[in-house]
Amino acid sequence: MKHKHSRLNTLVGCLLAALLAVYSHTSTAAEEITRTLDDQRQYLLYIPSSYQATKPTPLVLFFHGGGGHMQQAANAYGWREKAEQEGFIVAFPNGTSGLRKQHLLATWNAGNCCGFARDEQVDDVGFVKQVLADIKRQVTIDSQRIFATGMSNGGMMSHRLACEMADTFRAIAAVAGTDNTQTCQPSRPIAVLHIHAKDDTHVLFDGGAGEDAFRDVSKVTDFTSVNETISRWVKRNGLNPAPQQERSIPGADLERYAANNHPAQVWLVATETGGHSWPGGKRVRGKQPSRAIDATDFIWRFFSNTSR
Image 1 (tube, rainbow, N blue to C red):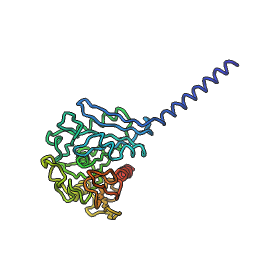
Image 2 (cartoon, rainbow, N blue to C red):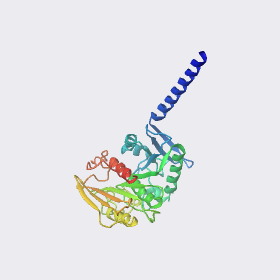
Image 3 (cartoon, rainbow, N blue to C red):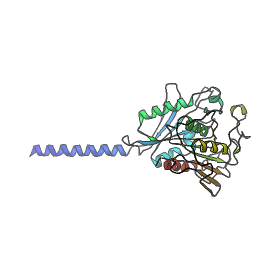
Image 4 (tube, helix red, strand yellow):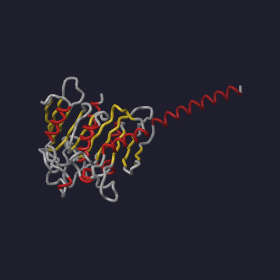
């Protein structure tokens, strides 16, 4: 009889241990860590509380604007909150700077722009590959759902990644940063979303650098126009040159370029107002971003639909 009780206690103990293991695996706390690579470059990694190591998880890389840095990007655009809400991992790579603290006032080498990263010909594409390899050593990533997005110079970097790493990224989205690559030969079609305010005074909608670009105009470039950016991607993806869908929402116009049974669509959202800012985001230098859309939510829905 005593032997039977012992076996029963052992069985109950095993069941409790299994239940605790399952509970701890599915109810972890969100985690945010700073990673430093061998060359001392850094990125911030946010892992949502819903993450499970046994389940491949989507990954979004967010690139800060010129003069920003990874912590500023994590705080400013709502991507941590969206990752927690939707259950994806988000990383905030840091650009480079000539300052002693090189993670501040950083830029990206997006081709013809911008600043220190461009002038020093920093290999930011190589850096992104290192970041991705480091992330994959820590968490389980769904290789079919890796996305890139960014603001301004970070949006330009996203365009460059679409050109040079289309085999890695499922889709990219850029806000207020046009395609300023020097060459672009993507290995395959890639879905592209571009969001831009018609009254942007930094990266002008019709092309060129506006009055708010940088005090030192040598740090920027004669920016590609929004229409030329869209035209390039429509041609690269082999899509119909006329938009398949055109519609207006309060405060913005939307154009969608597609082809039959073609997953790599190109979308343009042009807001009437907002200047050089993130739609739905925080005020920038006293200017109110457009409220026509919430760019973070809109981009994630675009990414999600693209990956289906």
